[in-house]
Length: 223
Image (cartoon, rainbow, N blue to C red; front, side):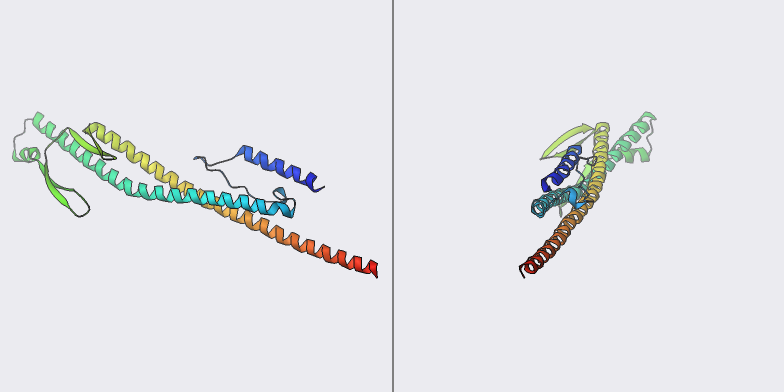
């Protein structure tokens, strides 16, 4: 009779697994245990079920740690991209202004100042900076990572950096959303674990009561 009762529960578990609902990034939802009997039919099913739930919690926690590391990297990366983009925009506007002044044949002291290079400082490492004179330019050099630097026309550099900034911000938003989602799933699995454990405790008490009643009955018959 017990095996007959267990068959529908297994079927419902399989159909739930086949559906595999997930969030937009493919992280699966945790199963919500409304009725413990859908997952365990006897006390022998409790241990493998709890083990399965703990494995799911461990997977969610692993994904949570990876997301936290990725978010930390994005939070460091986004200000750098924004700073570089602002610099490229400044250089482009300076070049456009210079071309306009030259086209208008302005030769006053103000236009001469615009032609002169800009004196600035750039970072060599965390504690060391150097001075540099930056003349009007049509191209910039951008670090792409892995010790790779490429030359880009200013317009292309601005387009590239704007795209990278938008992508990084979207990724950060997705990470924050996924992190909240994972925490909800971990909580759901912890509640499910507690429900299965409590079900086992209740079953133990019932079995113990039944054994005591059977013992009393057998003793009464013997007398």
